[in-house]
Length: 181
Image (cartoon, rainbow, N blue to C red):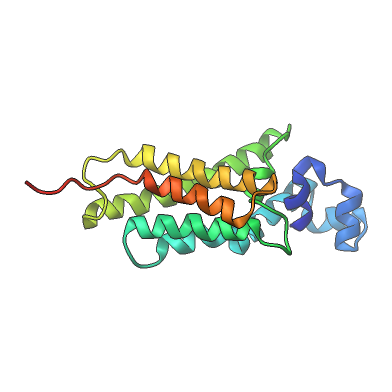
């Protein structure tokens, strides 16, 4: 997972993968069938571990705004942490990837993340903490784009403080409820 996270799908060679896993190519193919199948398993492992911050934040208590902000801040902090590759595997592994099936798999994972945000926003509308009539799809896409940008900025060396400033700006765009007359 870490090798794919650092180098992307095509950047991780079979020689590097087998060396990291301390197995030979025949064992890798016997266990996973292909590099693509191994990559898909790595993505699912990532989504269940380091990549699960968004889902956990959105499922936590509080308002939709608090949940979205927690998702952004938790991911920003994680993306900038030492001890693992910077940024998000699901976002960064898609760059310069010519394998259409891999690109589709990663795009589907990103759409699922956007849908998690969208569902939390819809719940916020129903609970009254997101203004009625707000463009939920547009807002979900916006905050998903912010998450992707945080990942790229982290890979480029942005500090946790710099990523926090991006989150501050994104949260300033949160739609405010208009006071009742």
